[in-house]
Picture: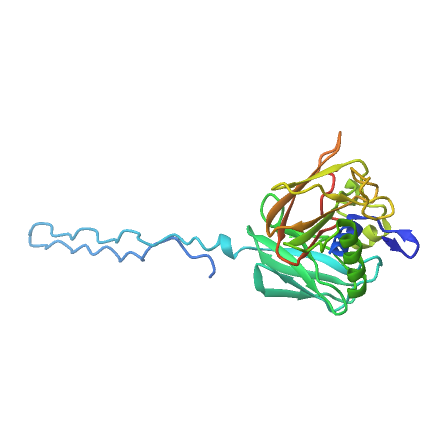
Length: 290
């Protein structure tokens, strides 16, 4: 299913898609300006010194604590149609936590959006003829950086989305969105880290075989996808596709993790709300650390 032309596009991108299928300025801290000393010159007739006491006022200014909240960072990526290398032009990228923020994808499908730093941000896409998806939740700070590239949107057309949803529903025996959302990710090859979109599209398969995944708080056993990018009950670990999906996830905040002998993985925070498709796809997602 993950194919570019006839070449498999097995990245979490695909897995994620399958999931889809499953589905003011700094203020000074100084106080009031002290008035000049008001010493009264002594009387030259030998009167006693009548100098007035220093009238400098104590600093009662409340420290400005808004500066950190005013700092920002940047998320960048590319929106493209699932199972193709085709960019989506004119799509709108929005942030759930900040409804006033948005960006529009350019002729190459790329976008850049400035968001508040040190606070969770969950982006989603709106594009004509395509089903909306959310990506993982990012926090831009000293630990994660203030500029993050590769926040891509693997976006299914409405028709493909309907087919994928039916595929997953047939596998599970019920609507995969019943009671919540669908979360998908790709247990990704570490070589994808830092790749440009062009490099990523040419690199496949995207996954690491043999890994197990966890979600916290714990949920039912995840669905792994086989080498043909199909949900497979016999698949107890990731295939080379790397795709994995959790259907019927109750609304809330979760952390995804993976385990594979000799390999260390990032952890992935995700937010789930009713009806969402959350696709933590490559080059980010549940990738191995280089």
